[in-house]
Length: 162
Image (tube, rainbow, N blue to C red; front, side, top):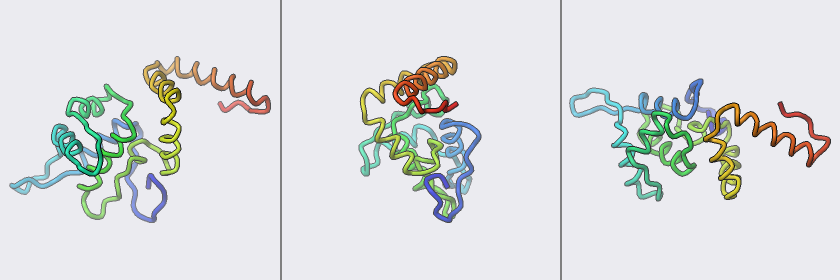
C-alpha cells in the first residue's frame, strides 16, 4: 500500500498522475442514495465537506477542485492533498484499503512524503518547484541537466544520475 506495507490490501496505482488518482477516487468511493442507488460524490459536495471539516484549516473551492480533477491545476498543496485523502478515506467502503496523501501523490512511503513536505517549507525550493511545474517537458529536462551540472561541480566524484 502507498504509505508503507501494513499487510493490508492496497489501492491499485493508476498508470497516471494525481488527476487520474483523484478521479479514480471520485469513481470508486460512492454512497447509496435514499432510493438505494449507488452515487458518486459531486465535486461541489466534496469541496464543501473538506472546507467544513473542523479537524483542519484547509479550504477548497468547487472551482479549484474541478481544476484539479480536469488537470488544469496540477500543483495542489500537501495540505489540500491530505484533506482530499481524508475525505475519501472516511467514506470508503469497509474493507477497502486506506486512502492516503502518499497514494494520491504517487509516493511509496510516508517518509518520502514527509521529506517532500520538509523540503517544500523552504521558500526558494517552493518557488523553483512552482516554476518548474509551469515548464514544458523539454524545459524541465534542460533544468535537470543544469542541476546535474551544478551537482557535478559541487561534487566532482558525482556520477550522472541519468
